Image (cartoon, rainbow over all chains, first blue to last red; front, side):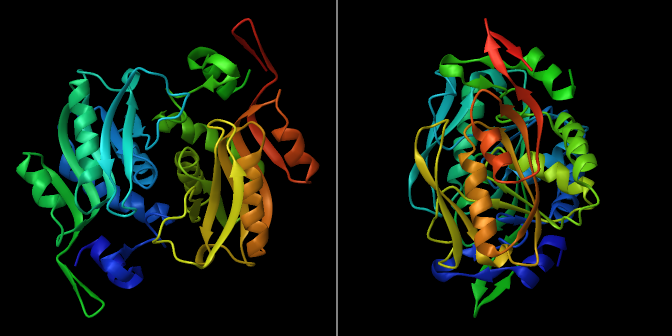
Length: 189
Length: 189
């Protein structure tokens, strides 16, 4: 088992409806040292590809993107907003997304000032289930004409289709832990 | 002028209705190196107070809290959620808050597993306008019986009442930049 798999086995647990909770270190309480160690794995995999910007989505992708930026010599992080408020302006890229976790629709929004055709992106998120958030981020990146050199998530739920979909779209996807299935309240990687 | 004031003067701008935009480095695109420099100022002010946890709120407080955790030898960060989804469970502290930016009400929610009476908190956010988000965070911290050793924000809008309110409540509030007023599209500190 790798670093993240061990941590999931130790501190993760399973809620009803196959919701995997890793909120003691990844997406409610944050273990920044651990996230920094995870980001080193992402950096080692994607370094040397001239990536100049990290694109993620609020809120749980931000901490991992922040420590990953440090590995890449402090390239900018852009986080997409899940709701368009009155202050972001009209010059935005947008993509409509359905959340697996909350079952609601939301709009992935990025200001046009922060993505353009000169950007070479690494797209980051905490979780990959059905891939909807990532598809939304890929969509706005494509609208901007940005290059996407890689996609990385902490936890991929291998028993849902997101990973398959993103790879079939041709993207180089690095998942730090892939949960193949959950059996008797145990995680199998 | 200090570090943040200079950056606001250089890269900030004013939207209608006195909304101050610093989205090129603080709350949409993130300049992580700059945030790390800001966090050093916060660390120097609050070090030596036995702070063991940073409490912030999604989404824009997370990056600053992340780099600040590194200064404090990687103490945990807890970020409050703005909406209660079905997966956070029922064991939560909650506080109802009205957003100045969006004019909507939302609920500040933190799982009871991540705040308790042994915690000594530093509360962090990106912006302070009317102080509603901070009051929500203070409320959940008080519900948990946690000690609050300090409160810090990047930008305080000094022409609104938030700073006065938080200080009148007796909290040690460090604002890295206080915008006294905006005159002729210029920021005055």
